[in-house]
Each structure stands twice: as C-alpha cells, then as structure tokens.
Image (tube, rainbow, N blue to C red):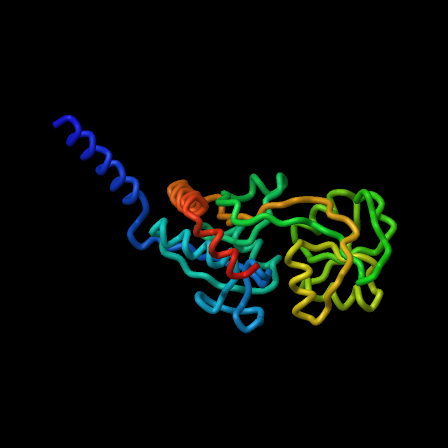
Length: 248
C-alpha cells in the first residue's frame, strides 16, 4: 500500500509540474542563416517552420517535442535585429547563440546544442600564421556585425570591419579588402564553399565556443527546466549524434 501511495504522489507531482504552464502557452523562436546549424531551405533570408533546416534546427524541434511545449519558428535577417528582439520580448528564444560571460546575464540558457571554434581565415595558399590574437592587430579584420566573434574582438581593443552578412566577408577577403576574416568554424568554411571558395587558410584558432538556445529573461523557469531535461535525454539516447551525422 505504501508503494502505491508513493507512486501516486510522484505521478501527481509530475502532472502538477506539467500543468505549471497555461495550456495555450507558446514560444516564439527566431534564428538566422548560420549553416550547417540553421538555414533556410532555399538559402534566402526569410523562412518559417519546416522550411528551416540544419543541425541545431532539428535539435531544437525534437527538444520542444519531447518537452511538450508549443512554438513557432522563423528565420530572419539580420542577426542584430532578432537578437535585440529576443532581449525585449517575453517568451521568445534565439538560436544558435554563442554563450559568452558578457551575454550570460542577458538571457536564460538551454544547451549546449553544439560546439564551435573561432578562427581567423586568410586566402588559400597564404603563408601567414599567428601564435596569438594580439599579433592580428596589425591587420584589417572582417567580421559579422554583433556576432559573438565580433563582440569578442571589440572587447579586446580591435576595430573589425563589420558586415551585415557574414558571406560578404568572403568576397572582401578574396578581393584584398580585408586581410583576415574572423568567423566560426565550421560555419565560415561552409559558407565559403557555398560561394565556390575553398581551401581558406586557418591563420589562428583563438577560442572554442558553445552554441545555445537563448531565452528572454522573463521565460518561465518551468520552460527552461523541461527543455534542458529533453536536451540531456537526447544526448544520452544518441538522438543528437544521429542528427549531426546527417550534416557532417
């Protein structure tokens, strides 16, 4: 009898936790073209729901499904606009967002979804090699406006030439308008390949980073808890590995 009572109590607690959110609760999720993690199926700067693909897009979909939380998903441009939108609007989320100590207090976080590296790229065949970020201050560096890589460089005293689209830096690099392209690996090389450019030289890898789902600070803690639990389960049962194998 005692076991039955305990089981009943645990079931009641689980049901109560699930009922903590209103039945009509729905999150608004925003993302951008950041292949291979999230991207529009047609390569354009707007897409919605199942017209969005990518490693993290699939991870987030499965995560919300397991957490039993309704959502809408939209891909928009530019990053700066959707980043600021999520900062200002409750019940909105943004991915793939690089976690940094500076950003930590601005959002509630679920993740990591994936790991990346920050790199300085030079044209193919370049003999340039750097042993520290400080050595790069003598060069013109292109970056993506308001991206974590650009923000990091600015915090270190750099003045990167920021573009509204990371792809713009590919042409600038090839034309000699910038000496180095500060970007994320594998995103930068993936974008370059899409533009017909391959073999870019990694001059310096200066940081390892992790990509998260960043949620507006007013997001209920119950949402964060459910999503993190679902993500942890996906890591344990191999779902995330299966998704990554489809892209990499």
